[in-house]
Length: 191
Image (cartoon, rainbow, N blue to C red; front, top):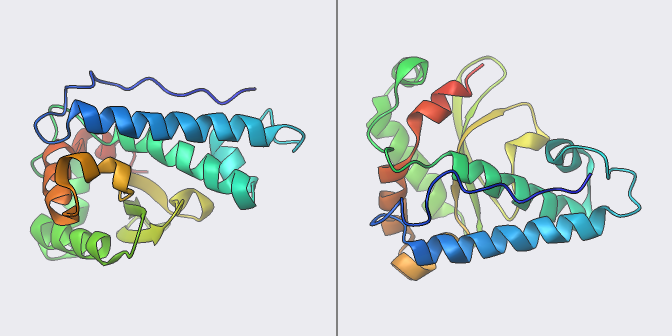
């Protein structure tokens, strides 16, 4: 089964002024290249019939990198919404309060991790196996799919996600990211 490029769940201009259509176009081109690379690299591996999530969990080397990037990007699109922003809702909000420090503290910690990552990668809000929330960031194709955490929210820290709009200012990109975060989608992923 060939891995397909998922449709963007909103118009390319829907996240403006926070994320421009030009940035989404560049970002989608990168996502498309990852999907195409996965399909080429899958040939002859015995993993061809698996869904992308399982390919990520089982692959190694270049296939893993491309599959994880393809999955991470598809997940990232589902973390954003033209009606996003604000603060967490529902059970996610309750878990944040129980964690201590409230949303403002968690957002600062997330930003600290994202800004502290040297080079390209991903920052994540995850649910730990014990039900608690956690924050993590990792380089390259880092993804929670390879562990026990459930991904709730992803922030792409590769340059194609922010360079056209923010140039070398990742902090300004993070400010824009928080304006379009889809908390309802993150809440729905809780287990």
